[in-house]
Length: 369
Image 1 (cartoon, one colour):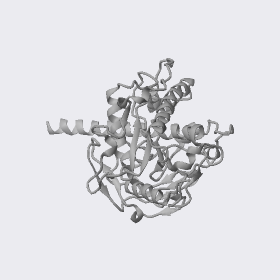
Image 2 (cartoon, one colour):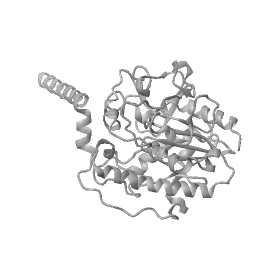
Image 3 (cartoon, helix red, strand yellow):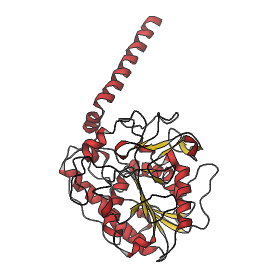
Image 4 (cartoon, helix red, strand yellow):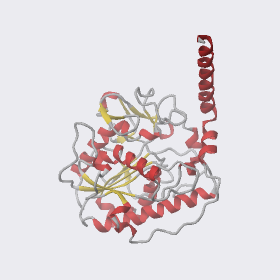
């Protein structure tokens, strides 16, 4: 009996190792096969101008019951009298192949979105009211294909974000300073929002900062169209921060493979161009910061329902092409790591306390124009 048990254990070990090897070698192909919808995109109606007048269309906004953006880890408190407003666009939380865009009533996607808002948008709740809209996000598989359906899905999602932003601006006081923030798909939509609603417009004078995290911004082909300068100093305002986190050894080929085939906002190819890389530990472009500069990483529980802050654990430096390198894989954060040592899911939580301090510092330096 014991011998049979050992045989079973040995077989299981071999299977696990084989699966790990296959994922490492064929991770991108496996993800595409599992996550890219096979059905053709079905057109949907654009969001009506007044749809975001309904508070139910927001995960977070002032007055929301059980607002996920008001969550804080032990030792922190949301601000009692916020002096700014945050428009936050949550990352992809819809992972099925059933459709190219998430239905607004998809329970699993909505619960994941709330978890992301808890772990990301909460970094701003000391200084600001947070507005986070529901939107018909593109499914995760849309980012793993070059099918035209992908662009249709992203355009629909962005259309929702645009309508939500216009409502946000109409509801907040006309003189309130604004922080724009997003992650992953949310950051992609944020770059389009900057181009379409901020660049060259009077509202640009109200922007404290834009945190476009987890999506590459080409310094050469994208940045000039966004209307804001990159944040070169930790007390600079009216500027953009962006980074993409990888442990070492880093293999960003999955991102580069797709991104290098795209065209920048100025119409030129993005191939080979460097990305904007803000070091979240210093609040400035580039540079190398030790783990001791990290004020606190948000370490989540397995179910992401609870989390604890631990300082001095994760360093950061901007490496080749503009990816943010965090050294060896952090101990205690080993779930949801994407192929290539990509810590994309943790772009905010790795530096949660530094982002919180960064936003407060920039608000303090902000001068209304």
